Image (tube, rainbow, N blue to C red):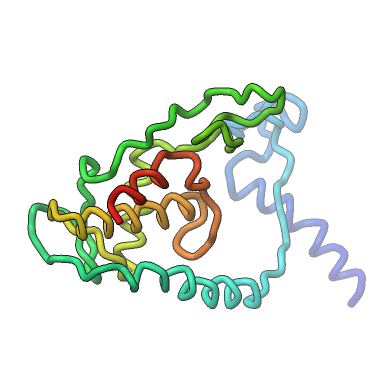
Length: 196
């Protein structure tokens, strides 16, 4: 029985290569680049992984606390205009997102690999993100129940700004992840103070 298992494990990678149509066949074999577009030959690429549900449960449990602060924001006016409002989902009008006020990629003057954010604070050089990435993150927050009203009132502008800040801080990991850009990668702290 043991020898059958060893034989089976020895044959599986070869079958995997044959199913992909790259069984050597004079196309370069292992050393000649073979049939894989990424180079590296026809070496089998078989990984066996074990996934645990525990991290997923921890991630989903972390999502509701991140959504709590905007609930205290003033209620949003529901209006058309193509902008998404609380509880729904839809396209977010990028023109309603305040300008960042910070140019991405400007190196910090302290000699580190960081870039310069608001008031010279260090930020990752990938921040602020491209606007289309932030639009996608805001749409995810809206789908999670945050408001992004299209109105022009001070309350609507503050609600939009708060949703944009939360989306910015979660832009790389999704709602509730905390994986994104710090608020100092924008000048939105000053903007929020002027709206309050």
